[in-house]
Image: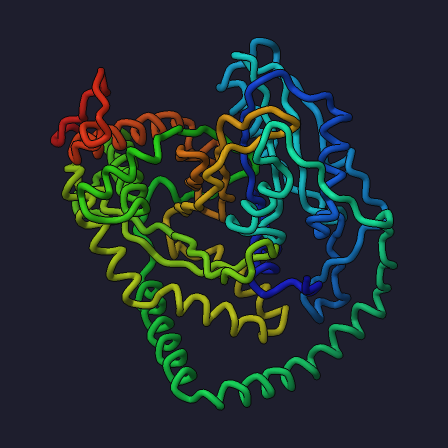
Length: 480
């Protein structure tokens, strides 16, 4: 594993300013009685050799002369990272959401490994929960799924994990002088490595030309998308440190039936449902939405298959329009589908990846200022990220995971983030909001549920799946 943070990884440290906390997280619910705390600690600690980064912390280069690097934490203690809480029994989902919001509103300690797990007892219906929190500098959504797959089992009675031959011993922490010398040395060697890489690439000029053309075209598409700021909205206001959190549980088969009937992708259905929900919520607040398109930042994984299991961030971004002024589900889906198709053909994601790679050669001080400048600009109204999760049942100490609801962090002046993750035939929508800016977050969740129902009705999805029975009445198209 490379020890030095990439420019993208370190940008999440620079973006952590004011009320913005740059950690990804999840709420996971399980069937059955909770495990004993000591058993949970032992089970997780026995697998940390499979994700060695979880026993490392950040070391910062003096005078900002290089990006931080990972070093072994000589004081690592799993009991600090794995914690224990209980709700007053019988704990409701609403109480769990309030606890999760409080945990997700707390900044992580950068002097320790950047992850936490909270065991929550006291849930009704013979359930317990796990809240996980990991800094974005450590994982992106896809690599986070890999870590979950390592820490949990795919059977109620798993095969014991093989243990290393020798116990883990931390390597010595480099001194400030060593960190500075190493960073300065890299400045002289990295350009040489780049020249050698360029020589290797020039042996295949056609491939190089193709990649250059794609990269330049993508950068142009990104520049055009970012020239104009995103429209004003109640989602773009100064935020504080406190959070609200809720989730919506959906059926993945239903989303697949909708996309098959309307001719698109599952992600098109997700973005359309979000667009319909936000439009209804804004009109309920008295906001004008006619001809209004919000702009969503949609992270796209550029992780190669060979990089599966590696930590760090391998994502690019696309700016997706959300036609919140369109009220008819079919019309909204058609607009979203066409826009996403054009975005993919424009190469925006390729341009974003190219820009990210170029940023690795920028001085850390410039990267820090660029990250803070980006946080102050209104390039997008909210983040909507859809991550494919494990499509098999997962178990923790023999207990089946029932639900998985993700969290995407809020940037400065961005009061809402929506993360979606699939798990074992379900789609979990996690909605994280600033506490003061969005006291009506649950209304957005209700609008999201009704928007999914309306899309299913418009596509005849339930009939395709052979399902009958009472369903939510579709929202009238002309309603406000």
